[in-house]
Image (cartoon, rainbow, N blue to C red):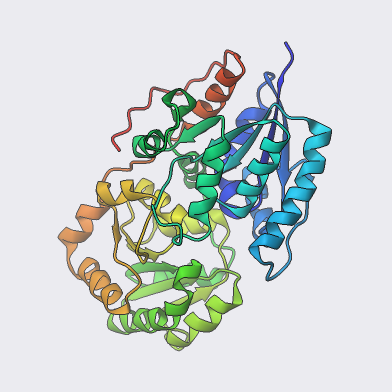
Length: 385
């Protein structure tokens, strides 16, 4: 049997986290010859992910430069990926999600006649401007993919509504749940003892994260709102892990840095972030990944966005979309911190994103694409959303 040649491309921390279980499955099976390529779009944040999950890319294209415009990232990625594609000649190319790396790799692979396999397919906000450019990237990839692996039935139905054949779609669950459950099962500690000690010194814990470009203009006012909450709830510690983008720090910190119960850090390693989420009472965020992770951990989440491509968590009741208005952030957070019944209703909601076997279903679907019989232990998935 000649193994199918599979190329996997990622460039950002979320992609690496969500692809780690898939890479592990591919590398464990003789039916596939895999080549894992990192574009290095977020190089500073990738090393700890690959170390945590025990894999390294076969090729690192090293595309990371500060303040690169999107077209620069994509043009450089296309050029360098094309060289790899020409040499490896993959039968299929796997991309995950909606990044500039994913869109560039899908286009490059399609132009070299590889079958494009899209993990986390079918997410839609129905607004090309939000999130930007991710919504456009998703639609571009969907137009050229041969196999669409969706996390939920809703995502599957989005694709069918766009004219994509149901035969080309497989509902797998989200691979981030595989990665999260593996990480959450391990013992973890903060590398900073001061963070660990602070965590133990307060009765309650709230996390705040923001990195969306749509919220940059509002971030100074949001920071003031967060400061007001911290002053009101002196028994609660507010953790603020900040993205490496200096504009986020410049806007957010003035509203909170003077407060003793606000802990502002750089990006936390993934295992430390999950460790923090497991012990927290509330997260306020604009993150896409957190909308998937919070339900799996039973952590109530307030989403400071006006649109989302992940409505399942809202329907399940563990995420509430409130927008970026500072007054609304204060009132909604106050309700959850003051009302035990409201908090419990969100904490006990259902996780709509899978059972931790998405990577196995992904590899089985990939085998079916090439008429390969792949045996897995994954149970049947019965998604409610």
